[in-house]
Amino acid sequence: MTSSRADGAQVPATPPAAGATANPPGPTPLTLTPGKPIRLARGALIAEVQPGCGARLSRLARRDTRGDLFDYLVPLGNEPFSSDEWPKAGAFPMLPYTNMLRDDTLHWRGSTIAVHETPATSSSLHGWGLRRAWEVVDESTHCCVLQLDSPVQPAWPWHYQAYLSVTLDDQGVDMQLSLTNLSAQEMPAGLGLHPYFRWPAGARVTFESEALWRSPSEDIRWPSEQRVHVGPMEVVSVGGGLDTGGRSTWFAEVPTESGRFEARIDYAGGLRSATVRTDDATWLVLHSPAGRPYLCLEPSTHRVGEFDTDHVVLAHGQTLDLAMRIDLA
Image 1 (cartoon, rainbow, N blue to C red):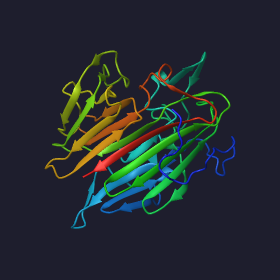
Image 2: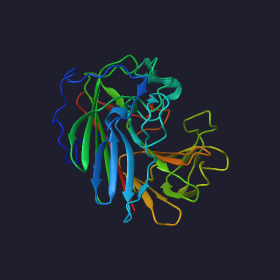
Image 3: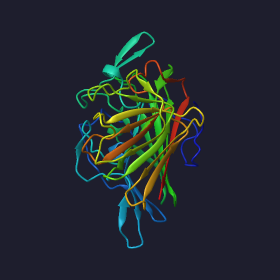
Image 4: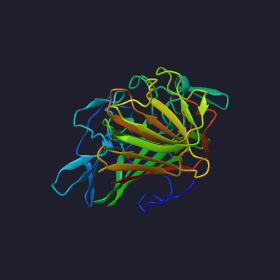
């Protein structure tokens, strides 16, 4: 549950005292505007990061010998967007919990907390990390480290600090996310990463799961009580969607034997692939709405909708980590 940073990035050895941030954030803005991105390059790979748009990895691409770019993630455009209706593009961090809580409510040690920040958001979907501007604390040609300091607020009555490092090498990218509790009281915590991979017709994804959960309907965004043991799985894209039942979201449990997730997307023609790996997640959310050519593979540290009964608890100064590796070919 707790660990030190392992990516070699230069970040503070100890968290600052509560409230000791040089750039305290205000409320969640109504609009986010892409600015000049941090550009990373290594070999034939390029990546772009937008600190002001929720620390979003806004582009991940490979340049071929002719100079053409192949985008693995749906690239983020340049237009401003609502913090509550973001473009389905790039990859962003989810914190201090993943996806959503049932009825936007946290039940915690006898208290009921409405995790709904008005007027900026209509729900608490995916937390607040993607809706805030992050501070750049380290940057090089192939790596950057971003920081978010979030003080106590009514919708989340704990002070926490998060770091995200994005490191590019010749084979792919590492994203390492951490969350530290700076409050005196214990805090429930969860992390996730949310990439939007290109998912054109003919692409296929393969993965293995201990059990697969589905929502009973598209109106309900958390797992039902129906568990299906699946083992190896393969899904071929027909331009969006995951199953013939019209459901866009699956919830996969980490395989018991390996304790890790590995999911691979192969693009039509067999010339390009992307493989997602993580050792820190207990769930992998797969999401692809019918008719939309993207696929989300979201490693998460807790079950969607059940954070109040399935969570990590951080004491003051403790840190929760989540790392995701994307290998590209």
